[in-house]
Amino acid sequence: MTVAMTRITPNCVAAADVFRNPLLEEPLPSAAPGAQRQARTVLVSRATETCGNCPLFSKCLYDAVVNHDVYGFVAGTTVRQRQEIRSELEVTVEADDFDTLAGVTSPNRQIDHDEVVRLRTANPHESLESIAQRLGCSLSTVKRHLRRARSGEFAPKAESVPPTLEEVIEVYDSVVRSSRRRAA
Image (cartoon, rainbow, N blue to C red; front, side, top):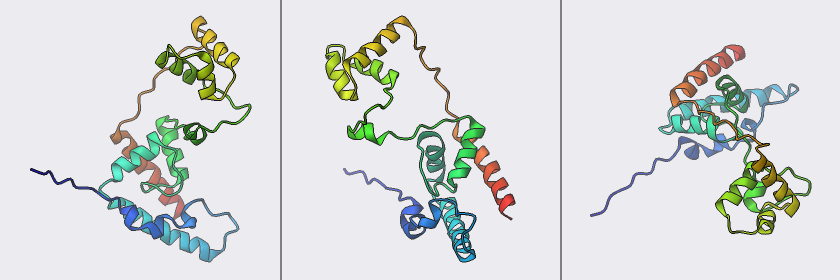
């Protein structure tokens, strides 16, 4: 017996010509010509309608506000609107650290204390030198962070409770409504 799996394709994939348009990436400069402003208004309108009819809208909105620092027009929101929603919900989203994911390190970058402690806890038999190599820092930096952790100098970060989907949608409604009133 086989089970048929249904894949839901986001509406933005079908409307890639709208969502990949450079005019949706960033707000227009104040000196932008009227034709460009009008074209952006049409694109935002089409994108908003497309997102509003998408079966994945709620999940997309929640992820764009709470989990990922995405750019451009996503889940019926602009970058500025998502910042307003996060501010109202007191949500902080860290930008993805693609350099670390790719194994690229830069000199004089700040080493995350929690990452040093996490690596040591996860790999107690691994040498401190190999942990330093993984992090792209010196052995003395790893030792310093572990010494601070033992002495209690770094208190663990308080776990924040993420907002519910209902809270995100409620704030979304108020932010988008006020944005539309300002634009009118």
